[in-house]
Each structure stands twice: as structure tokens, then as C-alpha cells.
Amino acid sequence: MSLLIRGAELVDPEKKLTGTLDVLIENGVISRIEKKITNGSAKTLDARGLHLMPGLVDIHVHLRQPGREDCETIESGSRAALRGGFTSLCAMPNTDPPCDTETVVEYVKHEAGRVAGVNIYPLGCISRGRKGEELAEIGGLKAAGVVGLTDDGAPVVDSELMRRAMEYASGFGLCVISHAEDTSLCAGGVMNEGEVSMRLGLRGSPNAAESVMIARDIALAELTGCRLHIAHVSTRQGCDLIAEAK
Image 1 (tube, one colour):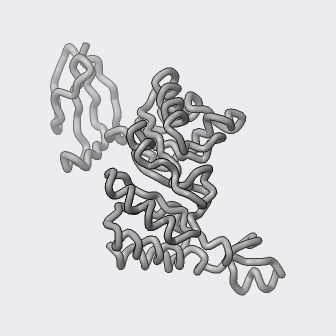
Image 2 (cartoon, rainbow, N blue to C red):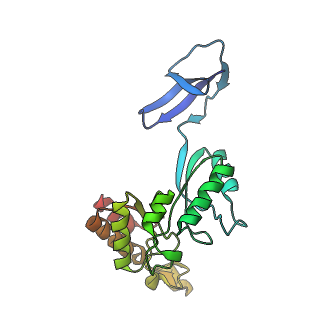
Image 3 (spheres, rainbow, N blue to C red):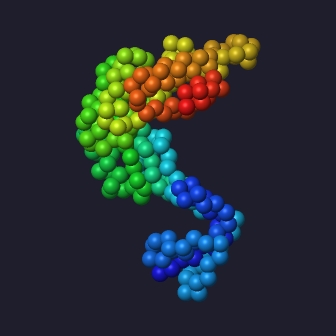
């Protein structure tokens, strides 16, 4: 069976293709991408005004399973992803129990293979229970199939622990995803610290609560050679630090 997608706004970063193009799919495989394709036997889909691109990847997804199926499940999350054009997801480890053992990783992979309609790549915890007190068994997590490490939602306050995590991660070819937040600076904060928070009499969180942790983790990444991703950056100072480090 052949399908001709006509007049789509194509975006393909890998092949550096952009523009209004026709795409011919034969037996489930893209066979031609050209400005104008003529194929009388193919079923035609008018895609003018629509965008066509490779499946999107979301590297920060909360699927909540196991333990918080009342919020989300692997199946419901993957269905939502497909509706939005996402074909691969990285599942955060802030589940209950946390994804800090091989058993939990294997459970996530098994459920993903059973019910998910997209690729699910589990992330493992940096520390046991995401408590920031002792390292998770990083070698075992890697062997079980995690693609990165994070205590997402909980910052690793102990700099020595974060250094060791990055050293192990680097040795196992894993990326570390940092939740950059100094909780001693922002404890109890309900909004950004500034003139408005003072006027309203509300406790604020200073931008430094984020930027000091970003600066620390950049320094540790340089020290250890670990690949580092800073999650949910929200301040200009944080952006400046990352740009300078790159």
C-alpha cells in the first residue's frame, strides 16, 4: 500500500530538509521526498498547512507508575504522547517506590512493553529513595536499562555525593539531570523574591536558589567529565551560566 502526503511543511533536522514537500510512503517506509511527486496508485493525503517531522522526544515525563496510578500510568501517558506527536519518552524516577533499583527499572520496562504505544526510556535515581543521602546502585541501574540519572523534584544538596554520582555516571556513559535548587535559600517561598513579594508580605524564593546550584553542577561536570542536563531552568542568571559553560 502506498500513501502520498501532499504539500506538507516538512522539518527534518537530521537530513537538513525544510520546506513544502511531498512524501511518498510505500509499504510503511518513506521512499521519496521531493517537491512534487506523481503517483496515481497511491492514496493521497492533503497536508497543506500541516507540519510533518520525525517523532518528537520528551526527555522529562512523569508517568508516575508504579505507585501513583491515580495521577498517570504508562499507558495513559503514552497515549497522550502519541496524540501530540511524541514517539519517545524518558520516564522520571519519582515513582513510589522510586526507580532506584533494578527491580523497579525492570517493572517499568515490562509495563512499557506491554501497554505503551511509544518508546519508554526509564531514568534512574541518583540517590537511594531520592533522599540525597547515599548513592543508588548506579551500575545495576545501568545494567537494567536506565538512560540517565536524576533525583528530579529533589535536589542533591550534598556536593560530594553529586560529585561521586557524576563520576560513576561518566564511567557508565550516563547523563545526569540536575534539579537545581538550593532548598535552604528558597524554603517556604511561594513566589519569586523581589519588590512584589515584599509589597504583598509573602516569602519569596531568590533567583540565587537556582543559579548557585547550576554553578556548582557545572563545576562538577567540568571536574568529572560527566554529561549534564539542567532541568526546568527559570532564571536569566541560570541561562547565562549555562551559555557561558557551553
